Length: 168
Image 1 (tube, rainbow, N blue to C red):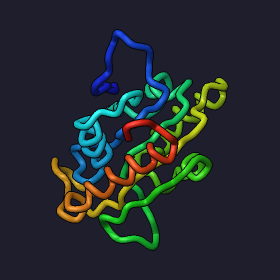
Image 2: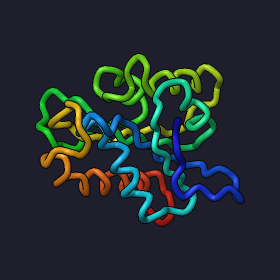
Image 3: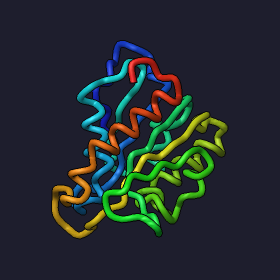
């Protein structure tokens, strides 16, 4: 199940999607959802913010036919430390099954593949993520991630500006 934040039912669906993914009951795995909520606090016109609570094919309809999709997620990066922000663009995201924690076999990767097969994939795709410190059971982010979450949100907004989204 996914939940839109600041979605106005009286208007057509925005062309730009910010999709925060991750399991908040696994500490830093939920950082994408937390970051998406922060972005939603300062809404950007023409941008829909969604918390992806159930990854996989259920997210296909959320991402298809968008001009731009920005994923927020925990990221594995070999030469990085917990709290480091990582940016992946277009083909890097599509090939990141081993780096984005929510893109794996039952993750957002399935939804992207289904949208591509249907000819309805986003024109631009990016992921702004952070290297987690903890992935064990429990709610709340580790201190290493919490203190740098603002940097992740700022980097996400910079990606929206790179895509020429007004007001980002």
